[in-house]
Image (cartoon, rainbow, N blue to C red; front, side, top):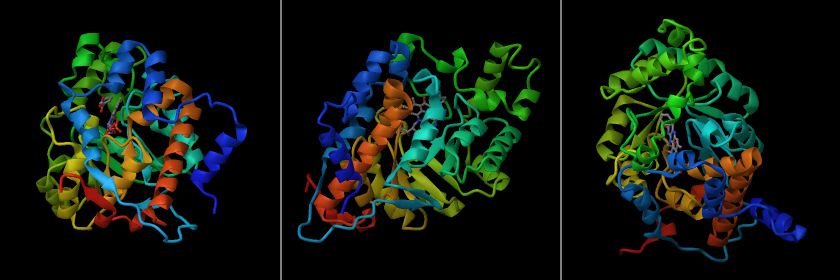
Length: 386
Ligand SMILES: Cc1cc2nc3c(=O)[nH]c(=O)nc-3n(C[C@H](O)[C@H](O)[C@H](O)COP(=O)(O)O)c2cc1C
Ligand SMILES: O=C(O)C(=O)c1ccccc1
């Protein structure tokens, strides 16, 4: 009868003390704002241009209303999902978020420990502050995926995915929507670009193929190494050929992240990738672009059940995750929610955010009359515009 929801309620109410941490997204965001300098906070919080798409990502959720069902005996509940062999305690994964050292010195190491402790898989960014091998060691046997920004060097791409495979990452997520950074006003106003300070380059600086491109080792001439990183990183010429070259270099399943157009989803099916992530990068790339949740139903339709469709951009609560799943997502990714908690309270902050999300999903599911997230579907929702 117990479960994530009741367990958390008993723990908090049982103690009878006001907890020293928030339970809301806004609360964690506020804590992060207090501890970070303006540049780092703006980098995490910001979006592209007017940030209209970033706001639209949130507003899209309000259009959908859950329609709870009663009297359905939901005493046994299973929140877990399995995506390409990776099991998660709930319909969540931790989205790839780069340069986490700007939020907390333990960065991805703390996130990997929190993910392992809560049973929610983590997707490690290419642009991490610790090497993928270091992060793997913290994550133990817990499921983990590697996100790749394919760069201008096919050999380097191959090297990175080979390293990921050796280090026990069980899928590769190729991000398509950030071949260069979007027009981010906050960062321009703060003149804030984390890589120029040498953040997020650990996987590159430790890579033999990357190092072979340099005249001097990154330890001797870090500025030249950062320039080399930027040269490799910017890829406006990226095409499906690059995706397929990565697929040939690994035996791991490959997903593509950043799909919102149903035509791109159909192409992904034709190309035969193993999964996709509907995402507009949290509104950080194309201002005025469709809200990710508004794009989801047509992508799900285009994919027609042939592969898992993950979703991110704007998920802030258990209710949000349930809505995305009801619209056809296999699971959701959360980005800023855990980045803020990491900034505010390190590993324990990330654990708390994940536990809150699991508890909320559990209670929401039970009170809506479902035993499993798999039971959610179109009839679980009402479209407020109808
Ligand atoms: C600070 C920051 C850094 C990010 N870095 C990456 C990255 O390295 N690779 C990637 O694929 N996505 C990256 N993303 C995008 C996230 O994976 C995800 O798509 C987005 O944050 C989801 O939206 P949400 O923050 O509204 O949950 C980043 C997002 C943020 C906020
Ligand atoms: O800032 C981002 O959104 C992002 O994806 C990124 C890209 C390169 C390095 C760090 C983060």
